[in-house]
Image (cartoon, rainbow, N blue to C red; front, side, top):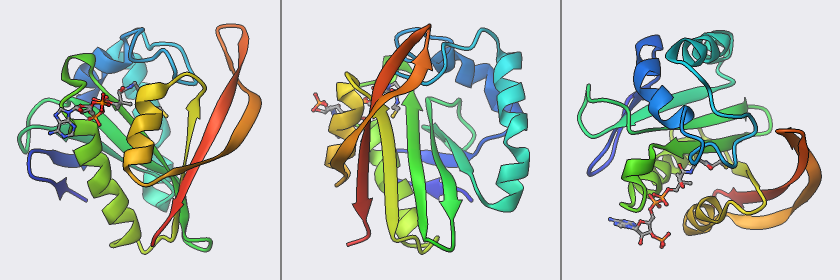
Length: 173
Ligand SMILES: CC(C)(COP(=O)(O)OP(=O)(O)OC[C@H]1O[C@@H](n2cnc3c(N)ncnc32)[C@H](O)[C@@H]1OP(=O)(O)O)[C@@H](O)C(=O)NCCC(=O)NCCS
């Protein structure tokens, strides 16, 4: 479903978005705190998008690209994953190209995703997981009303090293 904010247009990701998404997912600085290392080609991003097709169909995942005009190039991406209608919960994710950081786009896009999750999707709980040290992500989650709920020790294996992950969550009200 397409979503809109004052400055942003969010549309469901398509395979052709891979050529812009790679500008974020191929950037080592953007991917510094991601579970997986940077991707090395648009083709690899395309395969990742394809991998999620079944979950888009089942409703377990919704993944948007964020643009400054309705069909403009992707400046970032946001997603809801692990969408569980029975427990009325999901996990949020976000990633933006480095050249647009610090303009409030991530906050603006994610405020809309949170409103969509609690409104249109009728969920009651959202969670997020970020690597220890990802202060920009923590700041964003706190601005979105998420609270720190605990740490998963050594949860992620990245570049041969086990990393701690911080859990954040919020409920509807
Ligand atoms: C996490 C991430 C999306 C945050 O991006 P961001 O641009 O810092 O976040 P925002 O869009 O909220 O921008 C906020 C900053 O812009 C500034 N800003 C400028 N104009 C603004 C506006 N109109 N509205 C709000 N903030 C604005 C704010 O002062 C704020 O700075 P601060 O954090 O020092 O207070 C970005 O760092 C990123 O893509 N990281 C890599 C991917 C990643 O780690 N994802 C998370 C995995 S859990």
